[in-house]
Image 1 (cartoon, rainbow, N blue to C red):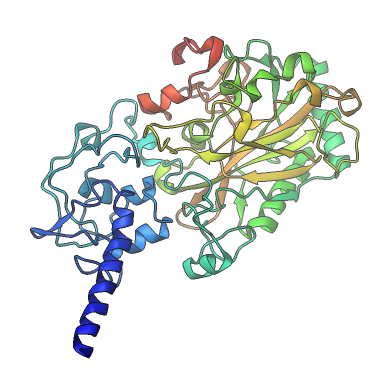
Image 2: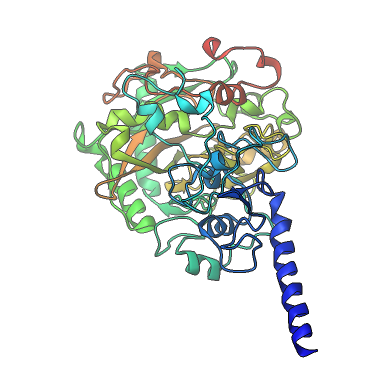
Length: 494
């Protein structure tokens, strides 16, 4: 009787374990169809076919991804057999989404957790060789990665706790003793936005008067505009690099110091950065109410990620894509604010701010499996500016310069009707672990702009290059086309 009872309990436990893993099969392409050496393997994440025991390498990777099928998990080769998880499971292009269409391939499904199990399926054409848009003669665009993997804010079902961070040696917030974020392995963590004072109020006012307004008064710069923002324009004014003019050395020293204090890393700054100066910051030109509710006329004009800037601009530093890890950051440093409130007290109605969204480059809509860009500001959090205070953020997270509602444009908070910020990027060097900073060289935040706007580029460190270092897929092009009234314009027209 006791033996029968133990057998019954053991079978019940085994059934329970198999059922537990079975609940995850729908979260993985062909999750119930994997074979290992001719044997069905329903317990896909475990060492034995029926589950209930230790996790295999794929099971560990799936758990680390929050029990979700992410682009990073798809692209990973968990068992080290030379085939990606997605290729073995029939999703070679990493486009499958739960609840959507069937995986690209449903036969010859091998096991991604064991090196002795591989598929004989042929690689699809899109995977076998890059297209003209994805590579060039130097191969820089193809080698330079612009973020990947788990590109959406963790859901309530996945709790990224301090215990999780310790166990996985990753960062939830900054500063952190580890060197990767908990979501997609990047540093800085995808959803952090740390701040640090880079220059003082007096230094900001000095830069505004002696550089920005002086250049405009003297007629040394002209405004930049693009077709997708026909009513808006701005000045691009380089902040002289110490190698060119020591007057503004404090500016570069301040950025490097702020970076060091925030990340405990060294930042190299080989090129001059650009300030973007708006001297007609009025609600008539810069407010937009409809874009908070729908995609007409212009949410897509501003919402962007900086993959294009990384691909176009990093070459000005003298480093090649193969010198860089692809791990990067972006920053915005306000040097002119429209309000005269105390410069350390940005508030709820400060019309100058950074918009950060909860999804990033590479995110696919779970319902359709297609790349997704937020169509309006409903997923946005505004990070209000303080004068001289730098905000670091992940460049592959969708973001925008703040576009306030008309009601938020209060006259008492916009006495100058002007704003200016320096925008730049940093990327990690493979050899040293230092970061190298480069400027936002395109001249526009519009992601559909894939050329440097050379007509107004007066930066002495500009290499005057065009689009050779930025090619993307047709699918990426489509999500960056302007929405609403300008939706019909092609990328070449912009």
